[in-house]
Length: 321
Image 1 (cartoon, rainbow, N blue to C red):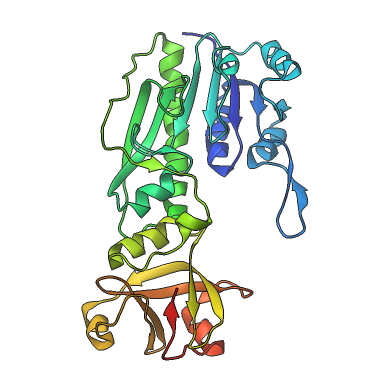
Image 2 (image 1 turned 135 degrees about the vertical axis):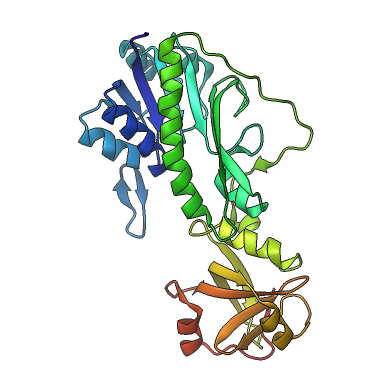
């Protein structure tokens, strides 16, 4: 059995579960690398990363380099004398870092690689209507998310599940797969599988203002998947006019596909038509209606649609842009 000395690298909540599992299972964590403290929130107060907060609570050594290639950081990393690096939701590592430990550097990725390589695999799996996803551990190499696979575990995605709910399930599954991966490495040489070269791969592009906007000119089911794939963060959004020239922005946290009965009552208007029926708010997509259930009008709080309609009158000419 190899005696492991681990450096853990990660930043958000998703990474904390894995680090916590290492600590609770008495693995030797000689250092934690995380992002520098940054201003965040409305007050722009300096915030520590979720990983840093947990690491400090466990009296673990924390390093927060701004430059992963700086000599000072590399010397300090070397001095920790680690023989395994574990990476969860961190940034791209220079070769000098991932090649440093004797037993390599492995990464936990929240998809079934090679599908959904990239920054936002949980969101894109739902946006694309996948029924199954999972987590993968793999040894890091020169390119992003391309290294030899150590372990993979699958989970089903339910039709109502949003990105936040799937994130939490994969976070816990991932922390268990990290432990299984460490055990394999501790027991000796690990059998890995090269990532298959597939022609048709989905990419988990970084989310931005443009690709989070709702495109109503597509089937209702795709609109629905887009909304739940971006909820609760960063949130799907749309612009609309309410019978005049003024543009309003609406974030949509929760939606439902309209039932046959609802659709029959609403009729078949043009794409982007907004309608209120029985105190419920609907928008027409390419082939049907989507009911908006929880929203946020710019300048207002997130709220159920019923509350929005109490203070905001949707006109008969309302439509999305």
